[in-house]
Length: 382
Image (cartoon, rainbow, N blue to C red; front, side, top):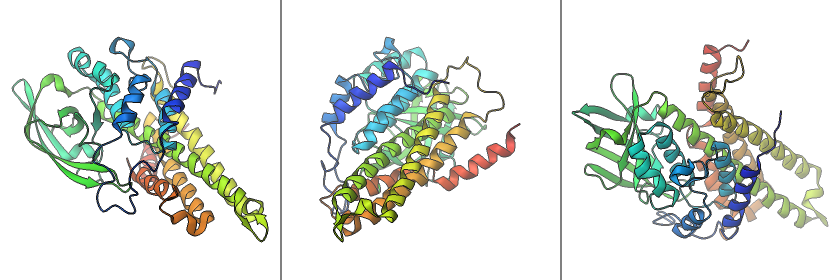
């Protein structure tokens, strides 16, 4: 087995590091000191740099202006994005574009994907449903109306919705099926109500009241929503890995320089043991993330390992480790920093807020443990 990344994937990482090298987590007001959102919009200047570096169409087909790579390459770039708390909808826009490419018609792909790859069209995706609990697709109903569709319902906590041009929304048909509707933000019948995330970013409750869409704007293929949800969850794990890695680096630097009783904190056994445990957490987060990303990147024609769980099983394991791991890494960092970790002109409190947001996004560890249990019951390993 070859666990090394390809030259193209490594090149994408280097390009991402170059773009993110100028990003600092303190570029907006602290969420601890801001009653509302830390900013009205995402980082448009950084978004343009990502477009110029060909990182917005990384996994799109070259005929749409993309680089033709895979979800694994996207997750490598998202890891670098998480390290610096980059305020851009890279995960959501990339995942929505990939879903359109995989399940949309040629007319829709030709209209949306080239502009998305150039950064001219910003996409996002709804995945929280009405309350953040329960199946997201049940929060919106889609019904046929002649040659088009009509949508009614509510999706909460939609990331970057106020700055996005279109929102990819899961909806149920009432017949046991699920579709994905690509809804323009300013479409008639669409209303956005501001919500503030744990990280201080601006989200939206998206209300749909008799929204009419053309047939080409709705993805009806079986499994489209499940595939998008798995990709969003895996991408969230990549962001958590990057964030956790940055926090461990920050902590290691602090305890190496901070002295107590005339010795660096890092030389104390209790401190060394805690940081070693967090290092192990990160390695487990990394291994399970790449397993899930690899499964998502496999060609449809390529057979999976005999007796393996469905991809959802690997995604659940990755999210369990990401949620638990990022929480433990940040909590240990706060503990080892002491009161200094709460100082608002030091970046650790921002990582804490973002870490909690990522821990709960796309389902907590407990929710994915339950889902994994159901998968194991339905697919006993032989």
